[in-house]
Amino acid sequence: MTLTITAQTISITSIEQLNELSGENVKLCMQCATCTGMCPMTAEMDLSPRTVMHLVQFGMLDRLGDSNTCWKCASCHACTVKCPRGIDIAKVMEALRQHVLRTNRNYIEPSALPAERIAELPQIALVAAFRKLTS
Amino acid sequence: MKISYYPGCTLKSKAANLEAAAVAALATLGIDVEEIDRWNCCGAVFSLTADDLIHQVGPVRNLVRAKEQGATQLVTLCSMCYNTLARANRIMRDDAVKRDTINRFMDEEIDYAGEVEVVHLLTFLEREVGWQKIREKVKVPLEGLRVAPYYGCTLQRPADVGIEPFGSFHLMTGLLEALGATVTPFAAADTCCGSYQVLNGEAGARSTAAVILDNAAASGAEALATSCPLCEYNLGKQQGRLLEAGQITTAVPTFYFTQLLAVALGVAPESCLFDLNSAASLDLLKTKNCLVAA
Image (cartoon, rainbow over all chains, first blue to last red; front, side, top):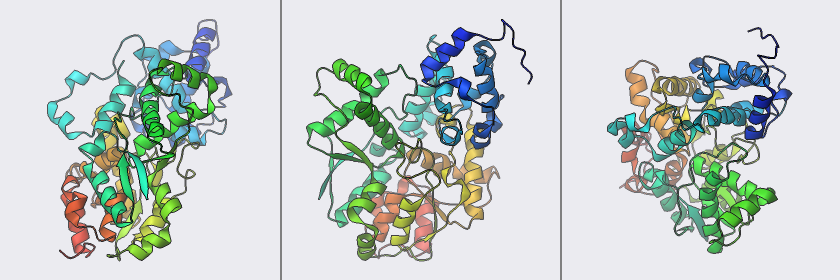
């Protein structure tokens, strides 16, 4: 994907907001794609973690709003432990989720879960999913 | 010896086998397990945003309970509880500003500054008991059982709370060898099982699980040892569905490491609650003569 840097494609405010939420500096990313190579969920993602990091560096949060990548992240930290620039990418993914969840939106709807699934799943699966994917 | 213990919610129901086997096994090693009073859910996942302190209150409250009860270390079994408690503990120990805010918010509690060490049972066993002592206490060696140690994510990542460095599996390897099992290393031992994504489009989590199980089988493993109820769900309880759907071809029954420890120490299988595993798990131990005679 080629990005053209214009006043419309770069949002300093969004970058600052994301850095503050995540506690990370997304500008450190050098686009090596080690994160994508480590990620166990890439087959489910529409944009690779590397592409997300690229868009994040431009503050393109609206474009990322259409992507499922941060929602398919399992917070397994495989990207984090291998990032050669020391970025905790799992925290960047969490910041992207929180950017949406803090507007009182849910990504999954707990009430839509069938009772037999709830009965079968371990408690930590339910608590973890609701923590990561609901507001 | 007595240890302070944090169980977590899943170990009181869906993963009661993880806890029951541990308590029975530790009793044979002369260790009493003392559950901390009035514990609450740890939150299952650590909150990753820098400004979110409210989700640290749950895990920190458990650490306060442990401190109140005079514990210097708090032992956990569930990988996710371990990770969440250990990471919250680091904030309280290392971040003066956040520590102060959380302590002031919880003004009904005693102040906490990371005094209690959060310890996973695997670390505890190596450090406080030792593989040699466990080897001496084994009554039913797991001879001929090829077990793959599976760590998943939260035992090792991130590095500052990992029970050992990413890519190293010596704790579970040491334990399984002491029990007489043949350890079968495999490449996917630290690949995520899909975790809570099982609630967000099950297909993705299932294909991740299939990759792990396929890799374990191809490495010659007959069984998988884990310490996480969510890994056990994705890799164990879902395994029948993966086999039916043809996503995997070879069954690799799953166990909690505490169950393998318990049976090797001569604990009766009924005390390890194998009915909460897939039927294939107990069948494998019977076939391999790894159970104490009734």
